[in-house]
Amino acid sequence: MTPSRRHFLMGAAALSAAVATPEMVRAAIAQDVALDWSLASADLEADIAPRAMRLIHGRAPAGLEGTLFRNGPGKFRRPGGSATHWFDGDGLMRSFDIRDGRVTLAARFADTPKRRHETELDAVVTPGFGTVGDSRARLGSSDDGNAANTAVMVAGDKIWALWEGGSPTQMDGATLATEQFVTLRSDLKGMPFQAHPRPAPDGTIWNIGTNGDQMVVWHMNVDGSLIEASVVALPRASYMHDFTATDRHLVIVLQPWVFDHFGMPFSSQFAWKPELGTQVLVLDKADLTRTRLYELPTFSFFHLGDGWAEADGTIRFDVAANKDVAFAIDGAKVIVQGRGSTPGEPAQLAMVTLRPNGRAEMARTGITAEFPKGDPRRAGLKRDLTVHVAGERGSRPLPTGLAVQDWRTGRSHTFEFGNTQVVEEMVFVPRPGTTNERDAWLVGPSINLATGVTELHAFDVARVEDGPVATWAADVALPAGFHGAWRG
Image 1 (cartoon, rainbow, N blue to C red):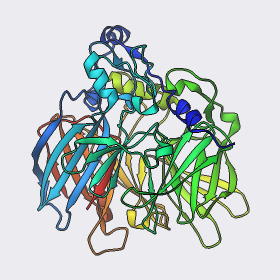
Image 2: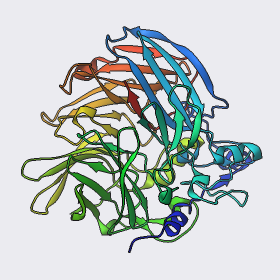
Image 3: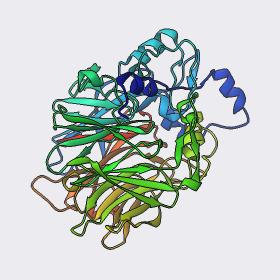
Image 4: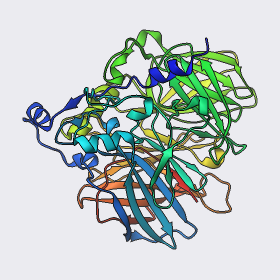
C-alpha cells in the first residue's frame, strides 16, 4: 500500500529524546573521572569566525585546492536539560578551505527551529535518537526535531546539512549561513532524506528516506534538483542509517534491529532480534519494482562502502559490521558523558558478496574499522581501495588512526597516531588530471588531545603508513564530527 503523506510525516515525526539535568548526570557518574577523549564531545558555545590554521608539519601538496565541509553535533548541554546521546547534539557545520597551501577554518551552527527553541528555553527539550525530551518540545512536523547534525551534501554553490529524519537544511557554502529547509517536491515536504546520498557514474545522485517498512527513493541532479521520487515497500521495518549502490542497483541492508513499538526515545522503538538474520534488498535503478532479496547471517551496521556489479551479475560492497547494537543504544551515551568505556566490540571491516544464483556471503577481515569511503571517481564501479578510520577499542571509544584496505592484495596499510589523537572520517580527494585510485589524497581532521586543538591532515593514499604529508593546527578544538564532503 502506498503510504499517505500524513502517515509518512506522522511516523517520521515520532522522534523522542531523554533529558537529564546536569545535576542528574553528575550524580550518576560521580564515581568516574572525565577522560582525555571527552574533548571530542565538549560543547562549543558559539560559532567560529574564519581563521587561519597554522602549518605545523610537512608541506602542502601541490594541486590540493578546495573545501572540506564537515558536519556533526556541536552542543549537547544546557542548564535546563541536556542531550544524553551523541547523535542528538546541535548540528555544527565546519569548513576547511585550502587555497595556495593555506587553510582557513570556520564553523557555524545550523539555525534550526529546534536550536532556536532550545536556546530560548536554555534547555534541551526536543526528542531525538537517544534523548527522551519533555512536554516543552514543539513537534508539529518532522523538521521541528531536525538537528541538521549528521552529514553534508554539496549542491552547486550551496551545501545541505543532512539529518536522516527530515529535510535537508540548505546553507550558504561561503558563509555557512542557514537559509531554509529544502523541499524537493511540494507534496513530499518534510519527507526523510537520509545522511548518505550516493553519486552515480552518470553524474546523478541517489538517496533514500525510510519510515517503518516504507522507503522514499530520491533521484537528483548534481545541483540537488529532483529527477524523480518514488515510494517502495520494504520486507521489514529495520533501522537503517546508510545504503549503497552500484551503477545499476540500489542496495538496501536490513539488519534485524526492527520496529517493535512506538515510544521515546526513537531508538527505543526498535528491538534487536538476531534470530531474523540480516537481509539485503537489491533494486534495479531502471525499474524499482524489479527486486531481489538475499539472506545473510546476523550483523548490525551504521556505514557501508560503495558497491559495484561485475559482468556476471555478482554484486560486492563493504561494510563496517557490528555484532549487535550495543554502541547505538549505550556506547554513544558514554561518549557524551565523557566517562567509562563503550559496551560491545568495535565494528570490523567486511566484504559482502551477492551471487547471481541467490547466495550471499560475508567475509570478515578482523580489522577494526568505521566510516568506510571509496574514491569518488569509482562510485558504483569496481575498485580496489577502501579508506577507514581505525584504532578504536572497547576500553577506549573513538578512532586513533586510519587505514587503507587493498581488496585486490588483501593488505591493510595503516597509520596510527596513538591515544593523543581522536581521528575523524577522511575523504578521498583525487589529484587533478589523474584516474588511478592511488593518485589521491586523504583529507580529514583530528582532535589533538595533548595540545587541545583541532588539526587537519593530508595523506598520500599510496603511502598512508608514512603519516600525513601536511598537518595544519587550529587555535581551538571543535567537537568530533560525523561526515563530510569535498568541493574542489
